[in-house]
Structures are given as structure tokens and as C-alpha cells.
Length: 50
Image: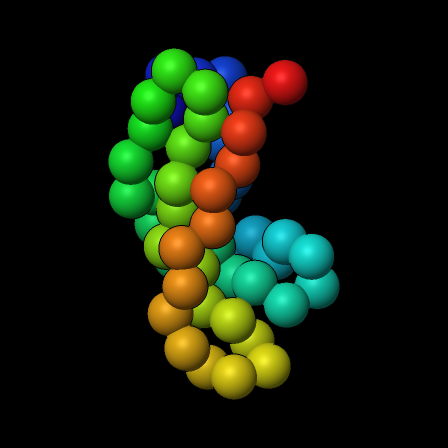
């Protein structure tokens, strides 16, 4: 992704969210499809650029 933010598929964020794939990106960050490990549900995770 071109925002300088990149999370690899399979990496775990916040000990409860596994990255599935990138969804979108913009000028302020990126959005990923993640799986919440504690519930097994799909979620969206927005990561903002600093």
C-alpha cells in the first residue's frame, strides 16, 4: 500500500486481530479486513498514518 503503512497477512494486532487482507487506503491511513480471534468474526481495522 502506498501510505507507508503495511501490515502483512497473518500478522496479529492488539493480540486479538489477525490481518486477512488490505481493504482500502487513503491519505491518512489504511483499512484492513481482520479476523477477531476471540469471536471468529470479520472486522475492519483502520490504521492511521502518523
